[in-house]
Image 1 (cartoon, rainbow, N blue to C red):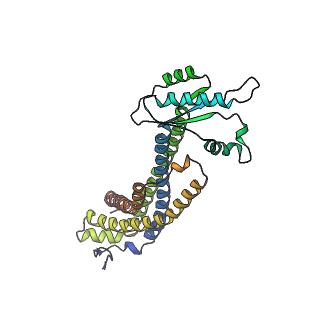
Image 2 (tube, one colour; image 1 turned 120 degrees about the horizontal axis):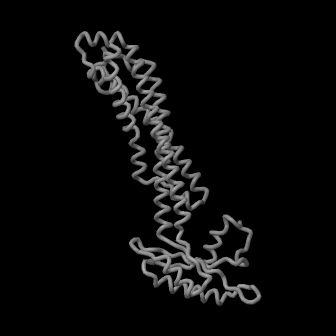
Image 3 (cartoon, rainbow, N blue to C red; image 1 turned 45 degrees about the horizontal axis):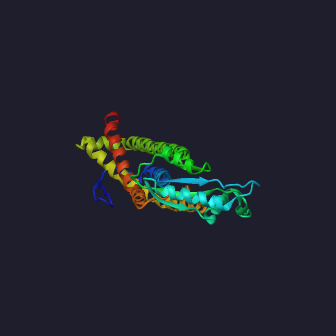
Length: 304
């Protein structure tokens, strides 16, 4: 009678020598690889949506269209005069934390993805932009601000980003829900595989199980042996899947950051997210152990 190398318990059922155990180890490794990848996507999308809401909802933009003279040329002096008036007005608005005039270099960086590097934007009628930071607990009356700006100049307009931010958040929410469904699907298929693998093993060891029942072994005792075996399979498979998934996550993250998109840059995994990812082998072990234990307990009465 052999003993388990890890726990030292007696092993009346040769589960380690079965092909089903080897098959489940490989299959569970694949499942855990997919699980880790999708889990990282879920947490990255959540981080990205939080970053969008924090950065964009906490700010608004005021643009001032350049003033033209009678010859349809830009009047820089009047434009600057209106800009200073709007700047002073926004600094006195309740709930505003800071107001910053975007420099020509900042505007050029914003326009480069659309216009390219070869276009001189100084000759274009680009509006002056004010980046307005809002207080976290500040209450902003956008209608009142709009009326105040119109009294200063009809060339000033306000954009609080709410319309397109809501669309982005809906997109992020849809992406997150889809990833969650895939995550649940992976977990469900893994449980399905463990169930049929355990049932197959019970049928293969039918005679051994009958002898164990004759000598007084309970269903709980047999289920524990299966639970220990599948706990080891789940833990080992979780480590393998994790070690394969981590380089993929890092490569995907570097590729996403290399695009230079400010929206994607918010999709970063926090320390807490990495800690959760590192615990996936433990989850795999416990999940495999519980699934196999329940399967054996419910199947023995029908098979024996």
